[in-house]
Length: 292
Length: 309
Image (cartoon, rainbow over all chains, first blue to last red; front, side, top):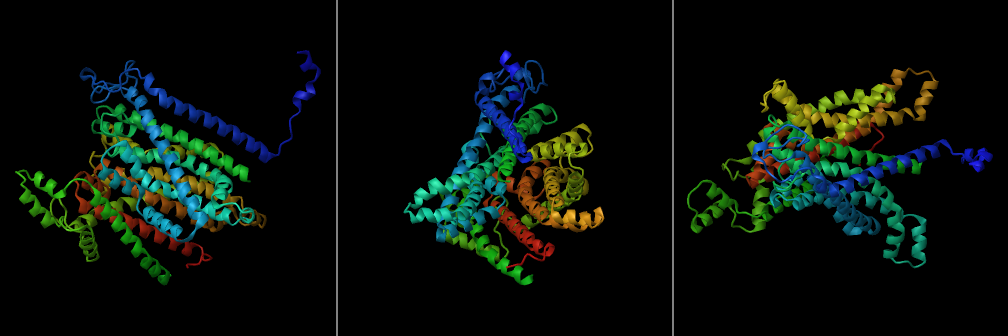
């Protein structure tokens, strides 16, 4: 205590920061906060199934379409299943399917994009024309056609959306790789005899991974909405499985009688997407302020 | 301009061909025999003989490429094939449904632009005021809303609580109201956000400060320069949004049972009516491609510096 009193000036001294540095620090704190919130949600969604107050699959003919109550916080659905428990149970499917899809398309798109951008040539032309074609079909329409043909399952939904989702990453990675390839230090590497593989891994990828990750965090929300849209149309998981989009889809026919069974899972989607969008935007802001 | 357009249209032909191949292959790979489905749906006993006959009649016994090319040549001549379900030509159905979808798409795009751009400009001018913050909350929420939530919410409020509209949208002006609104809300959110961001970045440019210094009226700067310069990126977001709109119309049309091409896609997929699925996907893809073309050409109209190669 004495020590602190003796030396009041020491505690006051802070490094002088410029306005942009202060802004940068503020954005950094904000991003870290969002990152913590998002990771908490991820962890929670994984373990949520252990916190369900009722069995999410247990039907109860005596408690059909009951309004929210102490026993059933968000009411019950047409078969008397607890909507709240089903939302918790479905969190893992809905959120993890989204994250998986984003990670896979990010990985596939980045690999293809980097190779195309770095090597160029005929393969690059073919791949880019192919992405042109995929991008000219409305994404959801193609996904509906594919999912409709493959039949309803979570895996098929992911395949249906994944067919087009890698293209945006590939295009972004390609444009960055083409830019980096031209830089003098890459030429210097070549002169010292580094292999292409070595250059790509140690120089090209680290220089483009930042903007790619920013793009990926921005895509989480949109991906989640696409998956929800497909499963709402009945092209997602098979019926008894709890998943938010298909819960809305099932409950839609009795909207009039049990609006809670429709709106509770829909709001769960809305809130989760908003959360991911906030996170994505703060990461994007941070990256922009770093560039400036 | 015309030369550019015709050049672009010629370049579209291989893309369209590739899309037909993609769609056709998808349908070809699909498990399930349409001939068997057609016969069993009519009831009665299906013998092998009958099945073979039906397959021959539907042209299913021919090899892949023969079927593909006969389909493509048919399309070139305006024949999209016959529906598996009722054996009627697909094209008239497609065109009728396309008309309904375009009605919705145009109405909602128009509504969104008319509402969102003034809001976007105003919030950019009144940055960080209460109004701006309230609008920001709304646009952020609208941006994250699944489109079925909006449609179901509107249906719940207007059809069930207030009973102002029938639950099934009739193909009339009154029936159009709710689907249009459902499609517009996410678009309004995105347009308003984009407009606000564009106008804000333009307002920070040096030419604006220069014009202020020269005593040019605020209104003149805003309408003659700032808005004009933001127009390019606004058009980009509008055209990107139409891509999402086409997908979103499937959900919205299904909910309101609007007889458009989106609900036709869904019903033809559940009914395994492949000629109709192929037709709807092809028509929607063509629509998307034409919109992209129009977008690129509009840049030229707005900004004469952009040269059309």
